[in-house]
Image (tube, rainbow, N blue to C red):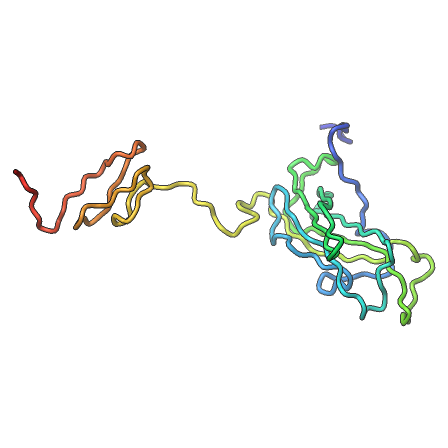
Amino acid sequence: MAYPPDFSSTLKYENRYDLDEIDVFLEGDSTNPMFFNISGLPQNLSFGKHYFYISMLDSKNQPYQLRQNSKILFELKSVNNVVLKSDVSNINLRNGIATCFIEVLKDPLRTVKEVDDGQGTLTVVASLTNNENTEELIPEKFIGAMNYRCVFPINIRKNLLNGNSPFVINTEHIKTTNNGQFSFAKVSYGALRGSPQGLQFNDEGDSVLPVIPTDGIEEDQS
C-alpha cells in the first residue's frame, strides 16, 4: 500500500480532529464527566461495529453550562493513535440521547498502521458558557470555542471471540438422546424402558446403537 494511501471516491474516510490535543478551558474526567454520559459500550471492543449512547447530564449545579446550539464532537483513537471509524446513527430530540457507533476495522484506510490492542480513548468536546453565578469566568479566547473536553477510556481486543456477548456459542450438537427424554434427530425417539443409556442416530435419523433391555423382561418369541 502506498503512503499516503490512494484515496477512493467511493469510500468514507474518517476526519482527524485530534480532539485530545486541542487547547481547552475545562477538562472533564470519565469518573466525573459533568456534562455528558457515555453508556452501552462493551467492556472490550473487537473487530466490527459497536453501538453506544451519548446523553446530556443535568448541569444545573455546575459552574458552567453548555452553550446553546453548541456542537458536540467526539473522536475515538487506539493506543497507537489510529483514529477509529465512528458516527452518529440518530438523535432522539425528546430525551437528548444520541445513538452512535464505533467500528474497529482491520484496514483503517487513512493510515498504513493497524489498530493495536490496548487502552484507547473516546474524546468528547463541546462549548461552554458562563452561568449567572459563575465565579471564574471563561477567558475571552475560549468564548464560543470548543472549550470543554472529557476523555473516556476504551479497551480494544480485536480478535476477541463473541466480543459483544459473554456467552460462548455451541457450534456442535451430538445426535443422541438424554436418558430417553429427547433427541436432536429429525424425529424424537424415546429409549426402551429399562435401558441404561439413550439411543444414538446417524445423519439420516436411523438408530446406530441398539439398546438391550435390562429389566429382566424377556421378549415374546411367539
